[in-house]
Length: 310
Ligand SMILES: O=C(O)CCC(=O)C(=O)O
Ligand SMILES: [Fe+2]
Image (cartoon, rainbow, N blue to C red; front, side, top):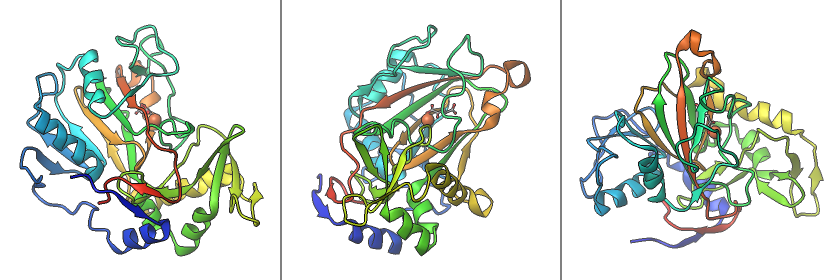
């Protein structure tokens, strides 16, 4: 049953800080309420075993996968080598409306697929390499999910993922209080709280968009409002160092194999392709990654109705 709860952000921060039990502890497997999914914890999220996404999947299993994504934030399906481009798009449609890429590489097999590669003839190069980011966070309603299919894995070229709630939890009180006062502006009218409750789970998360150079605003909408006290470059550096601190303890660095299929709760994680992902095919082999993203349904907001609190 879907719960509808209105929460204030103060409450959300306190409850999330006092309960970090959602952070995966090592264990053999995770029980779903129905027992329909075989889930194995990985450093961030779970591996879903025993499902071939290129074959029909029952409505009950799809429903379990939809629930699991918000609980675990990253779902890994291995060996999906038979999955076609149109089946990839169909899986994305389980989660909502497809957000079509702003442009398509000539080799893309489907216009909903962003095709990335370390060979410019095979796909776009350099996507996401400017820093830790949330895909399409600059949209009024940032995209809710990203679905990645590694069509050809190279010998190197991990993608790093980090859970933003844990980044916030592990920051000092001072840093968290500072982030809580910060907003960013992209273009004329899109103003985002940096720290806000995830629209479904209510867990604190960050709206970061560091492919751009947003204006930063303290205490937006109050009489103390001040612009660019902290520059966006400095904020980007601060967030990156919080993410990467303690020997990258919070980061899950995914080493891809051909056929890996990863679904992420885009709003709950930041991600960053490793530098090696851009090395030439002659050095690491050909890397081809297909990505489909799902439209978001809500504007980031400090106070909101959370649809399904954890
Ligand atoms: O190439 C990668 O590993 C991921 C690139 C990226 O940021 C994305 O596809 O959203
Ligand atoms: Fe990305």
